[in-house]
Amino acid sequence: MATLDATRPTRPLEAWRIVMSTCNAPAGASDVVTRWLVLTRACVQPMTLTSAAIAGLLAVRAAGFSVWLFALAALGIVLAHAANNLVNDIFDESLGADTADYPRALYAPHPVISGMATRRTLVTAFLVLNLVDLAILVVLTANRGWPVIVFALLGLLGSVGYAAPVLRFKKRGLGEPVVFLVWGPLMVGGTYFAATGHLPWQVLAASIPYSILCTTVLFGKHIDKLEWDAPLKIGTLPVLLGERRARALTLGLMVAFYVAVVVLVLLHALPWPALIALGGVLRLRRSWPHLRKPRPTKRPENFPVWPLWYAAVTFVHTRRAGALLVLGLLIGALIGFVPGR
Image (tube, rainbow, N blue to C red; front, side, top):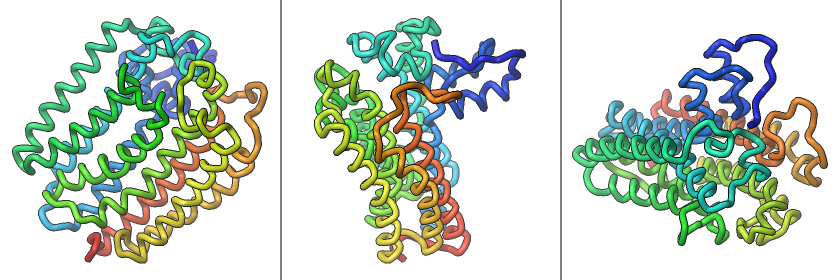
């Protein structure tokens, strides 16, 4: 079980902060919230929260905007992400993909392998989260109509199918495209529709830059796991492409984010203040050398999520560039921007 050493008892708020920044709990932290944050891998929830923020800021000035329906939709995708992480751990552990020496159990505690929870507990939590999401779906559908169901079902298919038997998208080189669709058009588009009752093409287009960033995080993670996945015939795109090509493609996607932002501003799908996101190039410049060379052969000092390396590099870049994009959209909302108008 991967934990951080501590020489004194950790207060709950500090423990939650550590979990959110490292995916691991400090030694001795055992409160319910800390355990839940670890079990659901809440450290990656900022990606979903950013997708929700993008949708809300694009929608807030649009006709028909409802703040409470937006809040429900945002809550729904956050719960869906937590359920997704649980179900992936359930399937990967039960199918034998996750073991004690596989990266999933090394960079953070695996719920079952570490002994934090039983498989039955994970299944129960997954069902409870989906029941809450079902209740949210009923409310949103009653207010906005059947398209909400389509977004929800497509999201559920991508979530469960990512690791589920038969489908196992990640084993067929489809995991990365699924993440692109889920964290972009489905999350942003679905939340925007729930909040406003309509969905212009500009919003779907505006979701693309951030979905590209989220895809780079999965590329980074799968490159890190390549030496484990290849012998198991888990056909992620990095396994199919090879490490050097996968690293080059990841860098290309990171650059594509900035190109997409500029193009979408010119198309009036994003407000001109979204160009603030170009400030993320400073972080890209720092990330670039790491992706141009092989991963370190041993764990760097005080590096909390080893053996992940490229995943951390791409996640930090995604967090910085995504935050700047949200800042630009916030300014756009304040000056009255509406996509396509």
